[in-house]
Image (tube, rainbow, N blue to C red):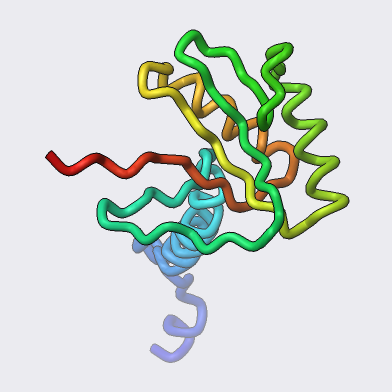
Length: 142
């Protein structure tokens, strides 16, 4: 009887070991959780509050991109010739290099298309500007 037990072949296990598959799935889950936020693109802005207090200004002149109702851009008070997105990027990058503390603002006409305002903000963002403000007017009390 002992000789029979020694020569008996081992039966193969018919169960699947799922532990390695679970490990792989958890690793993939962690990788996707880390990379998913990095894939989102957009323009970062801080929306103004309704009852906001005006910003205290120092004596520096802000860099303002004006967006007209027809979608043309003007930088600061230079109304002679409209600026393109490329010109806005170049001027903003130059100002950012020489005066890093400058405020960058977008002043859009209320009839301007939202897309035009976003393009102005993207041009500033591509120039390296981190914080972009939106210029608004205080509503008049009736």
